[in-house]
Length: 443
Image (cartoon, rainbow, N blue to C red; front, side, top):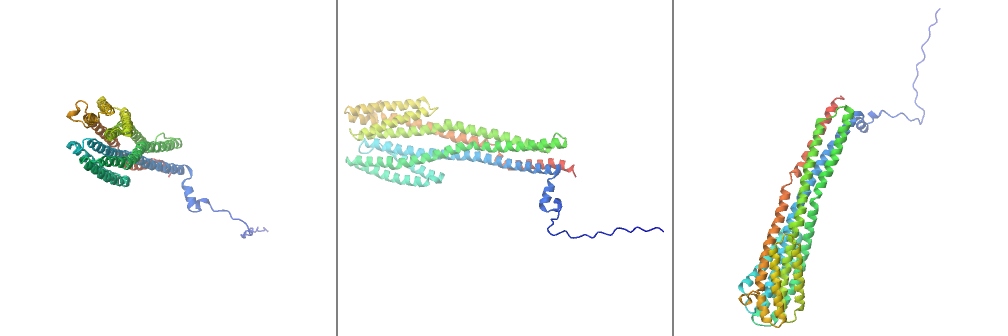
């Protein structure tokens, strides 16, 4: 009789002992982090990582290019505006010392001064007041100082009118009013003007320095993006055994082309600005300073004669001002020899004025200083007018050249300032297109 073998009893699962740790569930089903990790796993995951990196760098490059061109374009624009403001402030300075030179020289005549000279004085003060208003509108940061300057001009004008009224009557107190007016100009007005000049010179220097920073933005952004593109293309070539991914290569070429064009154009604009700064801009400053010092010298020539033997301080001031004119004319590269010659002629006549005054021939000295038919060939007024006319024409030419050259440099920039971001986005789309072609092969 065959004995039937019974099946083994079923195993009944039992609960784990207390304190036993259960194994963690599969990482792929652990939630969002697991899904993200799975998305970047394997070769397709690395492709996605390179896609994100290259696309992000493309957009960053576009932003850097836009910032670089915006930086240089804005700096060129501000340099042009601040240079114009600086020339405007120096014109105020020139008009003030010009008016003072007219007032002091006319005081030597006594009675009613020559109509032309009086008109020049009035026009100079009016021009200064008009330029103050223009400067306050052009640069709000200068408004407070310009307002204070305008108040000093009102005081100065009042003292000059009192000096004229007393001088017409032959009253000695007129010379005191003239000295007081000169003190207001020297101690109150001109320090404010000099502070404005210094502030605007710093602004101009800051903007000239800022023009070259735009190149750095474009080159650094472009080089970093190209490095990422190169690494991406090399990795793809090794993994897929295809040596060229056309869309990604096109994106790299777009970045390279933008970097080259942008870098060259920005470098050209920067070099152009540097050339302008070291030539026409420096020449404009030198001519402006020369004219201001020349009018100061002219005023001190008259004040020395008005002092009648006690004008040593004014004579020393003349010497210092004349030396500054010589120094600034030497710095004004491109200045014609005719300008230096006309200044030398004026200095020669001044020497004869001083010789006559020192020899006790005060009336002869005054005739030469005031000018006119009685002065003959030793006409200080005519000699100075020749220098004034020539230097004014050269100053206008050089300041116009600064504005024109900065404008040309700005107009020569390609429109990458507003095309930078679209270029970056286009490069990112090309990366996405090229990488999607390889990803399709793994589906």
